[in-house]
Amino acid sequence: MLSSGEEQKADIPVDTTDAVNDVKPIARAPQFPPPPEGVSKSAWKKICRKKRFEETKAEYLQGRKVKKARARQVRREKLKEYTDRGEEIPDELKRPPKVNLNQKDSGITIILDCSFDELMHEREIVSLSTQVVRAYSSNKRENNYAKIKVTSFGKRLKQRFDNDLSNSNYTNWKNFEFCADATLPTENAVYLTADTDEKIDTLEPGTTYIVGGIVDKNRHKNLCLNKAKELNIPTRRLPIGEFINLFGRKVLTTSHMVQLMLRYFDNKDWKEAFESVLPPRKLETDPNNETPEEKISP
Image 1 (tube, rainbow, N blue to C red):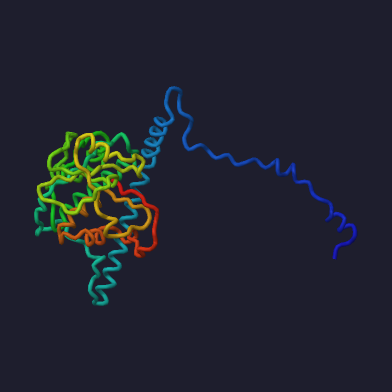
Image 2 (cartoon, rainbow, N blue to C red):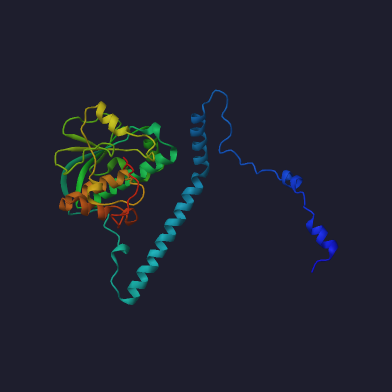
């Protein structure tokens, strides 16, 4: 119980104005230093991003190396557990053969149009190079292969392959061609883009299918559509919405586009191709659970 003096002290309001005013707001450091005179903000951001990427590149590569080593160790331990128990190794732990000796020629040509170098950040160039490697891997392992050509191969993408992926021996990849020429065919050709309303029903042997080789998080709307229109190349989109529901952002990578087309030739079944290629996390199991319509890139 408080005494009368203590009650009076308790009733006296405490002025905390000065204390509050003395608290200095924490200033957040700017993401990049101010640009030098004569350099635009956008150009300066690109310079800073490139510098930051180079500064963290070694750390990033080391982290990726450690992560891969850890994954290999976990896989070995799981394999040993199944072997010790005398159980069959599950499919997810089995590694597919690097080359499918029973492949058939699908009869189609796929062009990866990589003419958008200046529209991508440095890390996006790295991502694109990874997708090209995955496209090559799919073309070796799927039951059906295509003749794949990377056009407009130059600038930072070529530097990436020459410097960081030189051990890939990419110039000798089978059924995979890299060329600096930016020319795209206009006859018996279709440019695949999500920005068109017309869907593609079947893939026809003898036809060239063009895929935009760009990683841009949908910053550049209608990019491939407008380019195709300028070149008078017909455009189509993959019939994803007609066969499956995707959860979240409906974005396909360049490598997924290639793998989907190759997988389609297994049974000429789009639904089966989508469900077998796309990661389970992207598949929406409840068709009544609607999500905002978002575009598929490229």
